[in-house]
Image 1 (tube, rainbow, N blue to C red):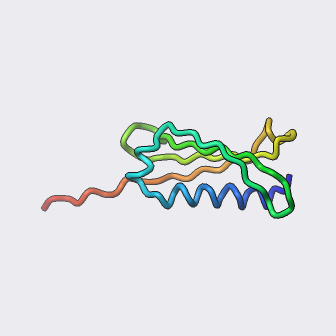
Image 2: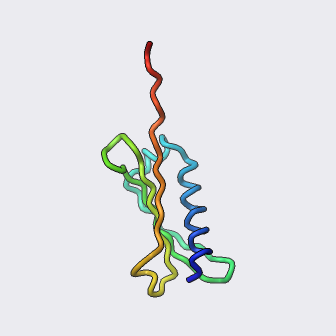
Length: 93
C-alpha cells in the first residue's frame, strides 16, 4: 500500500465530511460509511468513516476514518480523525 496516496485519499474524505458542518454531522452521529476508492496507481482502497460524539453527547463531534488495501494493512489500517466543535452560542448581555 502506498502510504502517501492512502493518507491523501483518507484526508480528502475526512475533509468532505468535515465540510458538512456541525449541524449536519449531528444528524449523522453513529453512521458508518464504508466505501471503496481507487488510487492513481490502481490500488483499490477500502475506507470506513464514522461520526460520533468525542466525549459526551451534544458537544464535540469526532469524525474517525481508516483506510486499507485489503492486504495485511486490513489488520492495521491507517487512521486519522477530525474534531468538529459546536457553534458558539451568543452570550446575552
